[in-house]
Length: 131
Length: 154
Image: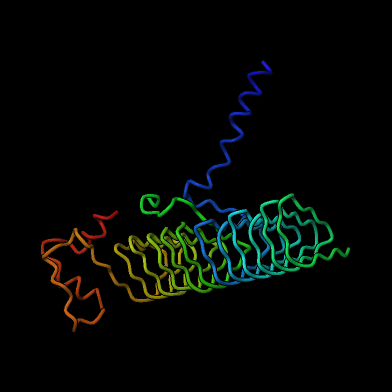
């Protein structure tokens, strides 16, 4: 019995996730800028943002910022929590956790109280950690 | 219905609490629930959700307005202004659907069908002003109701 239950929940859990692709207007509280987008301008806000595309401009966020490996950003980034897997040219400032993944290429100064850097990351700039 | 003409099927989202000021280009669909000021020009479709406010010129394949657009709009295919929608600016589209209850201030211009409206329609005379409603009315044969174009599309 327990077996069946488990199999069911396992099968069900991945289902609710993909509707992002369905193209139906589901309001969500996360901003996603996909790999097909090129943006020149500034972004600000309180919702989490995930970026896969290109952005020339600054981001000032009061929520989590995730820069996926495909993303290329030119500009200054400021957010309380940040994960960087893509390419960033500019200053990065986080008031909380900053996770730089191994795929990241960063040219610019970094300021954060909590830092994690994955193997393979390329960072050209000064890192300051003041809490 | 929107997926057919969408370039890639991928959809980007600007959520309610996010403001973007600048130009957006690319090959994606874009759903706007937040605020965009600047310009949008994409190969895919644009949906401005109820909470969305777009102060920008917008060019896309299909455009659906449930929120607000202030700016000029070019839909290469279909433009839809839902009953909750507000559209302030000039619109150009191949087909237009403006729902009851919506508000629209601006001029409207129809894009020509490249193949499906052949020889009957004379090539537009250069002297003709872009006031499309006149032109369209004069071209329509008497027996066809003026709605036929929109009806056939929907």
